[in-house]
Length: 283
Image (cartoon, rainbow, N blue to C red; front, side, top):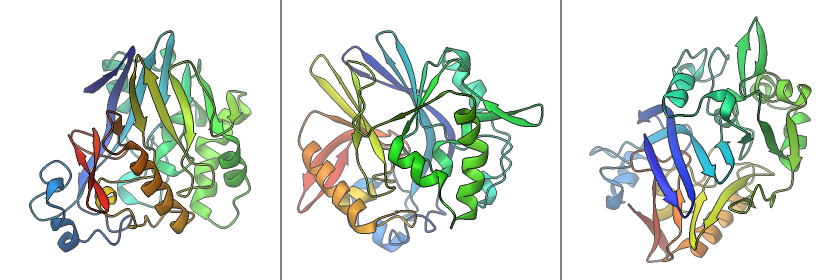
C-alpha cells in the first residue's frame, strides 16, 4: 500500500489490477521498440523488453474531516468487452478495508470521467441488482461528462457501463453534478483537463504550501510525458488531449508539485522535469 503526504492531506493507492504488456489496444504508438528509446522508464514503467507496465487503482484522499475516493476502477460481476476486465471476482473491497477504508466510511466519490475503468465500483451486485457500493458518499460527476454519456447512443459498451455503474447511483439520489472546477474542500479542487473525454477532470490537492495533481486519464502512462503527442485509442478529441497533456505538464515541470498517475504502475507518483522539448517523470 503506497501513501503520499501533501501538507495535511494523505493520499493512499489501492490497487485493483496491474499488468505488463498488452497495452497496444490503448496506446498503439507505444510499441516495444519505441518504448525502449525512453530509457528512463525502465524498470518502473516498462520491463527490459519494452513492455509497458500499467495499473488500475483507486486513490483515497484523507483531508481534514474528509475521506474522498477518486475513481472506482472496474468492479466485480460486470460484463465487459475486454476478457480480463469482465465478470471479475477480485478482492478490491477487502483491500480497501484492509487499508483502513471500509466502504461505509467513504464520504465522497469522485469520477474523473465515466469510462469503464473509473466507475466500476460505483456499484456492486446485491440481490441481483446494482446497488451503490458507498452508501454514505456523495458521488461527484462532472455535469458535461454525465450529460454526454447519458445520451451516448453510438457505443454499445458505454451504454452497458452507464446502466450498471452510473445510472443506479443517480437513481439512488447520491449524485451531485458539478462543474469542472468544483472545490470539494479547502485542500481539494477539480481542475479541467478535457480532451480524453468531453468533461474530463483531474484532482488538485494543495495544503501547507505543498501540491499534487491526480491525473485521471489525461495521461495513461509516463511514456506520454516523453511523447505528449501519443494518443490513446479512447481519446474523444485526440488533438485536444495532446494539447491538455503538453499544457498541464508544462505547468508542472520543474516545480515541487507531485504528479500522481491514475494508471501509473510501480512508484505511481513523481515530479515532472523538462527533457528537451518534452518531459520525464522523476521518482
